[in-house]
Each structure stands twice: as C-alpha cells, then as structure tokens.
Length: 234
Image (cartoon, rainbow, N blue to C red; front, side, top):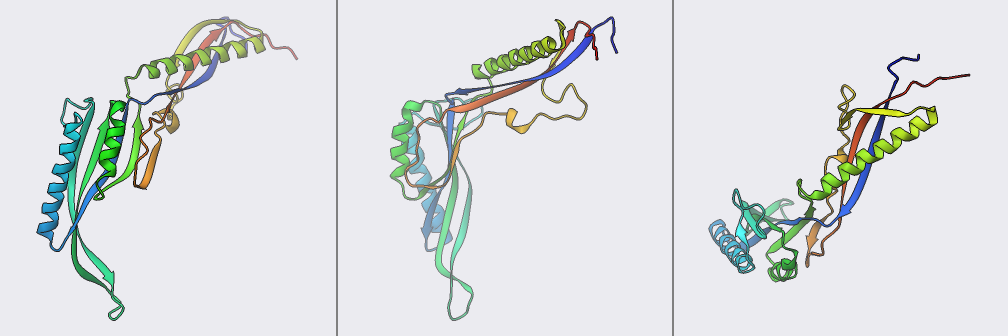
C-alpha cells in the first residue's frame, strides 16, 4: 500500500579485507622426563628459566598487565606431572616405567616480526619444547576494522540504490544502520563476521613456520533507507 511518507528499504552490506597481522602467539609446552617427580619438576623449572633467558636476550619480557603490546612477551603456567606407563604383556595392564614427566604450558607472543627468525632458531634448538599452535591476530583497534566497516556501509548503500532503481524510486534518507541482527528481534551476528579469521597450525612442529600469514577481516551491517513512494502496476 502506498504512503505519503514513502517506503522503507532494508538491506545488508558485507565487506572483507586482507591485512598483515599485528601479532603471533605460539602456544605449547616444555616437558622434562626424570626418575621421580621432584627431579622432573626441578628440570622443568630449569628448562623454563633457560627458555625465558633466551627470550629476554631477544628483548622479550614476562607478560604482565600493561605490557601486552611489548615486542615480545611470554607466559609460563600450569605445571603438571604425569607418570609414564607402558603395557605389560604379562599382567595385561599399564604399569609404571619409573619415569615421571613434568610439563609447563608456555605462550609466546611476538609483535615485532623482525624477531621471528631468531625466535624460530631458539624454539628449534630445544627438544623439550613442543609448539602445538601458531595463531596470528589482528588487533581490535587495527585501522583495517574501521575501513572494512566503512566498506560494508558503502556496500549497503549501493544495494539500497540498486533496489531503488529496480522499483523506480529515489533514496531520500538513511533511517538506521546497525550491526547484523539488531534491526530484527532475536537475530544474532554470524560468527564469521565477529572477528578476523585466524590462521593457525596445530600439532607437533619441529621447526615452526613463522612467516606472517595475511588475515581476513570482515564486517556486515544492516541498513534501512527511506525512499519515495513506489507505484506498482500490474
């Protein structure tokens, strides 16, 4: 039905950009095997000190509140022990071998990618260190986010004009622009538009690949435009 106030067009705009990441985090653990729990824990402590000493030589610091954006930070946490067991053919059970493993979880974050080659050498030289995951990150305040959101709004505007042209009307005003789901009760923003796509490598890595992996940042918006009244004819 026609109205003197015109009609409302509701559209969605989406955009993506590929950018260089701001940081990379390597997650893994240091594991030391000894004949008893005390020796294993002592060995793990020494291993952590050795690793963090080498990281400090690269300009790294222990992660603390307020230094999250230092060029290189590390954190060591969650020390655990585990008794080694092997299957015994006679008993048919898993029996202790007499060895105990002590493991300390380690996370290393790098923001100065000039340090990556040196860091790779440090990690590859210690057989007790197991790097299980490499995750690249785009900061929340990276200018790419503002740019891709602007791209999404521009895409919504283009779509609005496309619809208006098909209906033979003109866009007169922007009524609303919102994140996906906010213009419709109960809607939720799709997960793939909430964050940068993080490229990561999982599993055991003998020599981690530390070449910066370009990341995709994505945005989506919903927009409502006021348009002149469309006259429909059969």
